[in-house]
Image 1: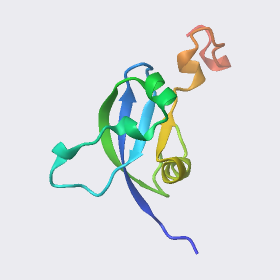
Image 2: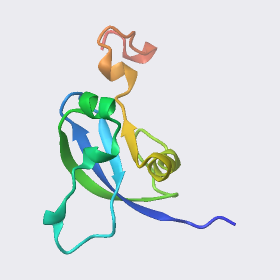
Image 3: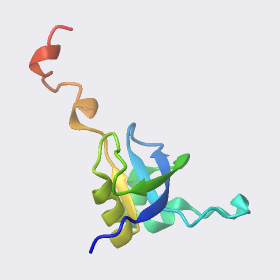
Image 4: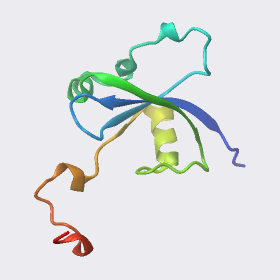
Length: 108
């Protein structure tokens, strides 16, 4: 029996790597947003250092039917439920300037 679950999360971008994002669970919206906690507290120390400063991007409601641009929403939800966070890393083509372009893009 599968139920459609909803997870509220906050997304932060890395100050050290373009296109790297941190998704963390966010409790239901609170009245006092000033009580914000450090989003990096959920990360292991080495990952915290690699991520750098976290800059808030947006809050998002995740459901099984929601489509995300670069990752599977079920993978994100599972990672947040099991680890407390999900790290979205940049696609290889964006971080490797020497990568061979796909056939249709050569010479563009």
